[in-house]
Length: 279
Image 1 (tube, rainbow, N blue to C red):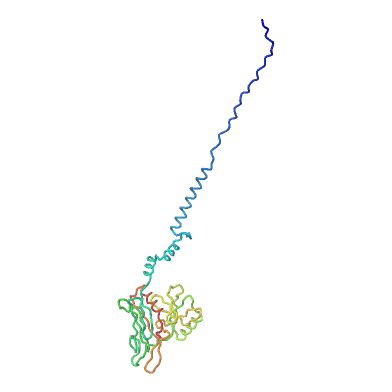
Image 2 (image 1 turned 135 degrees about the vertical axis):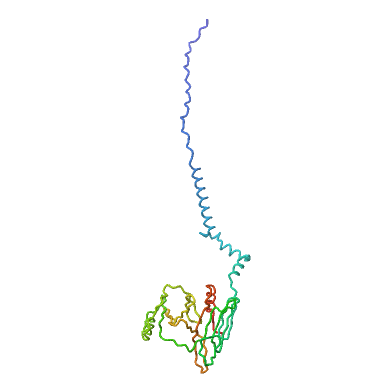
């Protein structure tokens, strides 16, 4: 019987059991998407606000300027709308050229000069007058809206009325008061310091109009407005007439139509402003 050799037995080496990796916490979802969404919404809101402000013309965007677009359109020759607007704003006028004065009148308005005693009811009888004794301005209905009428033979005494504008001259007022005191008359102060008025020049003389009353500056070239007490009479450079002895007269009564409208008053203002002496 064969003998089995005594061979030592190898102890098997245990195979290590693989250790599972430690469990990791799931990553939290990133907030980046939410931030991006908020930014997009904010940009949209800002864009809408800017667009609304631009449409309402609260702001101007240079490259989107409506004015620039209109100018570009005009430069490109597309000026139909612009021309139509400008045409609507133009007021048609005519030119009156008389022997003494020239004036610009609204379309269908007329002016008439009167000479040698005509056109006035305020000239004393007797003398034969020569020169401009009246002017009338007529509206489109041929109704007299304003007149100048030569005046002679009517005397004025004292100076009982004084017209004080905000730029009144205290020294001028003192002279008027002294004149009134000399005549023994009280002087009534008409306070126009807060009264609205239209101011313009007529033949080089400053005029202020309140309603249908005209006030002249008695002393041009200073910082005051010194209105004479006789505001019913006006004198303008270049307007005059003479009597048969060649005595010169420059005083004219003036008057507006009692039913004149505000629009017609402004038109008369423009006519008076446009007056020049005919060359």
